[in-house]
Length: 134
Image 1 (cartoon, rainbow, N blue to C red):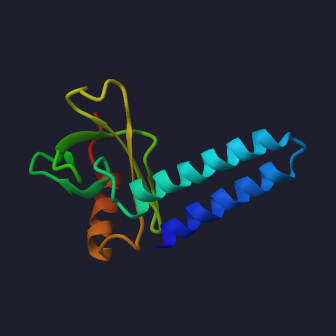
Image 2: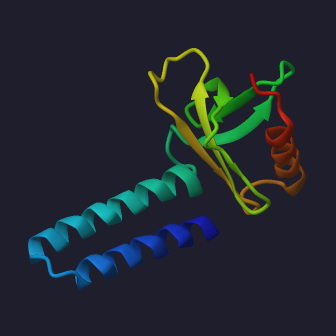
């Protein structure tokens, strides 16, 4: 729920800034609608995990490769990208599928202490920090 409140706060701030700019009313309305829909999408994708493409689990297999599990039942072996951010309070995984079926697309997974068990998050952070990179 904390992630949703962050997304909603950012959307509200964005709309406030847009409405304070000297733009015509039609532009303000269109941008506000886009911001609202984007906020709903991001909340469903990363906070509520209700979209089929949402990642609901992350694990490391016996070959020391990262696996992600999506709500649609798909399991993917992924490679962690250099843009991944790891800290105690927030982990943002940027991953790419190993068999290149995503055609250059990257997937982002947001992990906070609020949506995972503390010990599992600590183990994932340690693995991300000390994993072997080619």
